[in-house]
Length: 262
Image (tube, rainbow, N blue to C red; front, side, top):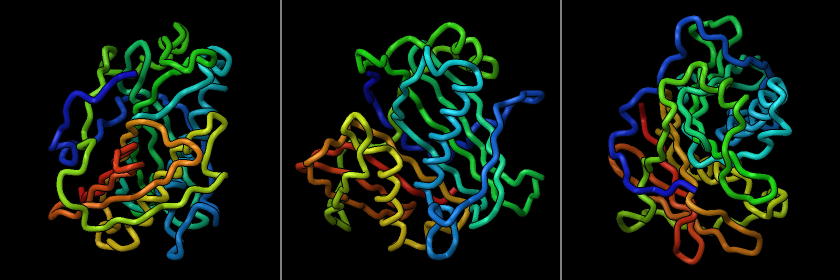
């Protein structure tokens, strides 16, 4: 698997690339339901993560790649909330790839008002997905047909991994708490589903309502899986720009998240 070799301290200043003119990405639509919103009826970040998983599966089925490239794991997810979505709002989701290599891809998903209402919800995302061999469990080559399809709007076909976030705490945490895991948090491989990490971010944001004022950016980078039976501890460090959150087991980080204003 690609490894983190360095961090980039200016990531929050870099906007996500626009969809190329004339592009026709994969589309789907959905309505925000009660199970994905908070007490203020805002679409939570873990709800966004589930939408990304669902449209990814739908996209693979639409291009007949479910059998050739069935398994993907996410290494990094970026969620830019420009205008939050709320309960009962209808969303149009657009998905395309803007960079890839032979084994992984940076995939964009835009969530917005179907009528492109400039006052309606608008959330942009980017996720670094790795194609996994179903028998080996290791990174594998993207099938030729899927690579050709995904590279239609890509500006980079030699994508390399570069970490944006520090893999270990850079100072004394300002908040520390155990985060109990449930049996429903684990996927068929015995690892915590990536949407569950966003539950931890939402717990943190409950104590930092200032960071939920749009627009803001939230990022998670996954370092290594969390397995059943392990005790997860969240360690947060506030700073003038935002907050960084480490998901730790035995004081070693398994994932790191950051939330900042755009």
